[in-house]
Length: 286
Image (cartoon, rainbow, N blue to C red; front, side):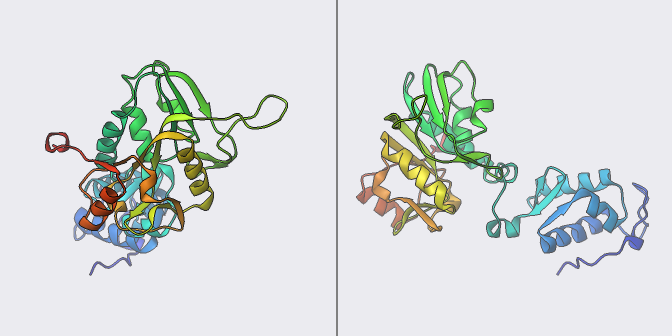
């Protein structure tokens, strides 16, 4: 087992002047063990702990990220082993399952018709969809995703609307009613969309689609209720899981867009509920 206890005396303070008996590989191993134990670390704290420069630590973290040992974040790193036990900030979640999300994004974008009205919820998977809409035109987009206004091209949108409410800084999203009011108050405007693109945190044959935040679940369910067609997006790491708040039953979706074929029990349940499963072809996964 890797030993995470290391003192600064084992390394010199100058970059590149580590003691001859201590190889960089040894430092990286002990660094990885320390990050796994601490959960979250900063470059500055690691540099002080291991007695090397911040640039050396950054290079070590970059390599460990490439190797899949940890997740590199702005100013530090997070242990991949503890990610499931903490709420993931958006910059961290964008580093997870990236290739799967891009494949899902490409498939889901294929469901969007030019000139249509779409609702998109917050999340990194729906951001991947937006990146694949660059050749679409005359879309009306309504979302609670604060990143979409900066990610989507002006050539794509006819109109872009952002739902108001409380801001969740960790997810860069808003939480509030799915609606808008006339100037001066009054009743909410009646909103309908052609397609709702909803990314979820978990999907199972028994409990349907779910997420970890109650307020987000309510908002996602409301988007679904206003849509003529619904596409639920989830990568394969979400299969067979159940989170705190149910978003919808399986049958509320028209499409389930994912990166690989669901396990047999989930596939059968989706088929029974007349949900079309979309997965990349072998050529698309290469």
